[in-house]
Each structure stands twice: as C-alpha cells, then as structure tokens.
Image (tube, rainbow, N blue to C red; front, top):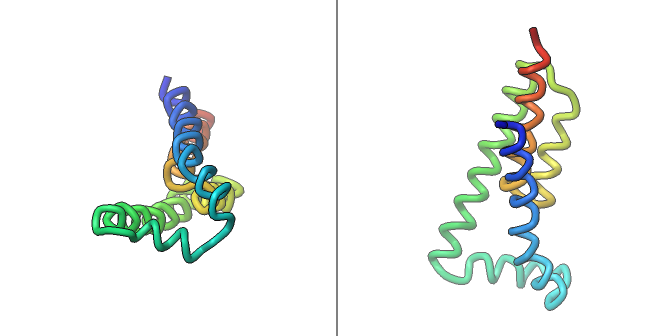
Length: 106
C-alpha cells in the first residue's frame, strides 16, 4: 500500500507543477529572467521559492546519504528528477525505490 501511495505522489508531483510550468513556457519560453522574476515577485512567492531551494538541497543530501547506506544504484536519477520537476517528484520517487530496496533486503 505504501508503494502505491508513493507512486500516486510521483504522478501528482509531476502533473501539478507542470500544470503551472507548461503555460509559462508557452508564454515566455525558456526566459530565465522572467522565471526568477515571477518566482520572487513578492514575499509569499519568495517564501515558497526559498523553501523549495532549501528542500532540494536537503533532499540531495538525503539521497546520497541514505542511498549509499542502502547500496542503491543510479542515485543521479533522483537528483535529475528533482532538477527537472522538483522535490514533488524526486522525493516520492526516491522513497518508492527505497521502499522496494528495503522489501527485497532480507
């Protein structure tokens, strides 16, 4: 049941952020200045931006620490998913694969 929940979170963690990002891309293209301008447009959006940046750094540390401890392979995939989508995909994907690893270990 836990693995199904993580899988659902992976789907939601991809679909929901991209539902906001794709319209931006269609309107602005890969305009980094516009991206960061809108990300930090006010204090509330800046709050969320900083929260996600710190969470991403913590997530990267956790992936390499826990992944190495469990001898998980291809840890770069979780970092890449974090960079391409966000913590909303990277974290549940890592937890899903971590759970699979824990269940296969006697």
